[in-house]
Length: 417
Image 1: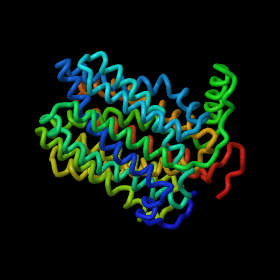
Image 2 (image 1 turned 180 degrees about the vertical axis):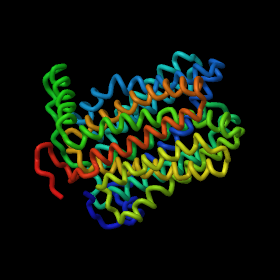
Image 3 (image 1 turned 135 degrees about the vertical axis):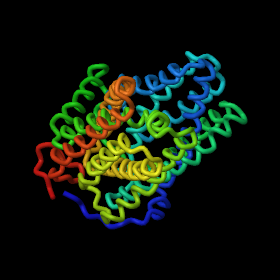
């Protein structure tokens, strides 16, 4: 059931001293991450002259999430989250500085994996602290602003990254990213979070395993999380390959040059910018509504099927604009809902469980998608992926559409409308 909230002006949320340092730090960090991503791919290719070596970066990013997700969740729930965030950003600044100095391929992979470890800790911890900084009424506006401003920064960064790297090499891009992590850590240090009661820090290894087990037990018992995990697994299986293989669709199905592929990415980016603001306006701030999460899956799934069938660039641009719009709407709705209904004591473990599930199924999707593209063609990847995503959206509505959602409800308690 949806929960009515008043529309909160976006500027009011951004200007809030409780939220502004976090927002500003992440905007600068997003810019650095965009430069870093392009520079890292270029560096690996220059060192290896191998497309396979570039593809191996995906493994370096996914494997740490799979292996360390359960431990990361316990860390986030056991310790002061602000300090965890500051420590991770400080460490990532050092790692990126090392990237700027290395010229050995194996060292690049090691550093990329360590940066992925940092993201495995940082991203769920960031989502876990947002409810402590914002009221329920502010949450959707804050997530909308954060997502859209982050996408704008990524578009700007991506458009300038190639020229910067072509002119000065990869080192300046890494230095900018290191500085952005240091700036983010400084902004995080300004946050004031209320005291919280996490799991006991004692018990050695047995205590850590017990806390990890308690998180999984909560996920199994909780009617919301237990139904959401399989839906998100199916969603990741459906979208992992279609997201990664868009360049293949552009070149082999739409017969576009590199500039045409850039237009496709731009269409997604514009849709992603406006999606959260449009959904907030249309719903009047009613964000505890599963339709905001799963209807975009259905629309994007139909769009993926259409991409496998159409041949013209104008149609593809229109479809991908809607694709970006629905993807951003779903992400903002998901973050807002999870931040609201998951109790603080297990929030880190639930977010990392969802991250691990998503990463595992994305890896499977990439493997299967590559095989399908080689055997049946890229259109088949989009037709099958779109059908699976449409199914995921329908399954989500069926399993969770009528589930009443309230703030921090507990398993076994009567749901309050």
